[in-house]
Image 1: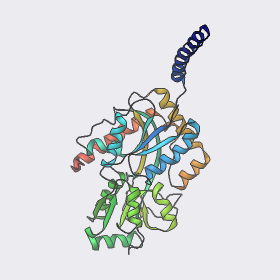
Image 2: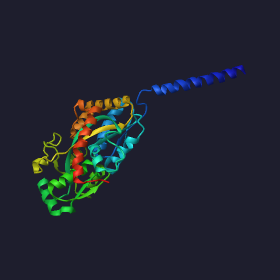
Image 3: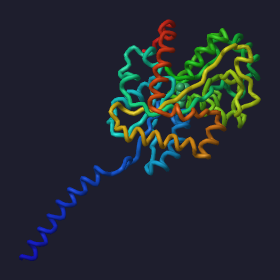
Length: 330
Ligand code: MLT
């Protein structure tokens, strides 16, 4: 009997000890102790998704936990940003977003998050040029012919984009203005599905980032009419810029940032940021990003302060332009 009592006491005591130490072990576990979610505001297969998956795979290795890419699409990227702003600030939810973070406050009157207040700012990510591509069987073989074709066909020409607030939408608006042709725009939840529609011949044109279009351009599955930078790209050296083909000063480069919900522990923000920096130094990642035309910012831009200040500058730059145009998405 005494034996059983002793065993029960020993078991009970060990349970208490295990509970106590187990609890303290759980608290002391180094971050991250489980997979980390990286929210992407657009569809799988699009440029933001490509960048998130490329970097996420490399970051998983250094973090010792999988970075899971989660696509939360809709409302030009604002659904994903609102979701992240309200997510538990425990270091296990991050958001990758682009210029849309700066344009949303002017475009959406009922925005239910504040880009400059509701987040922790992790780091700037990469800068990506855009390309104007068209379906392979479009009669126009170059940009000069495209101008003539668009003028002759007007709103019969379809221009795909990823919703109000998406950079592909911004590019389509600026291009229609610069070309002086009011083409019909067709929204998709991301340029992944928009590109599929170009490949399938259901839409005519798409302005999308090189991180998405380069493989299709190289495979010859789309027509390429020009790049949106002021100089030619190393990754597509034979492609003229749109500026050199008559759209003087036409320039769009997409910038990206990584955010976390406000209140996320500093340690988690710093470790995620350090893993990102490490991913850029991985030769395989660096080569892949260069092949896709992406530009990695200098180390001084890979900081929380740099992203916060860049977002503020960009918000101030876009806001009066969008307000003056009287363009609202809601
Ligand atoms: C995407 O990832 O689908 C694009 O970044 C959307 C866009 O054009 O802004």
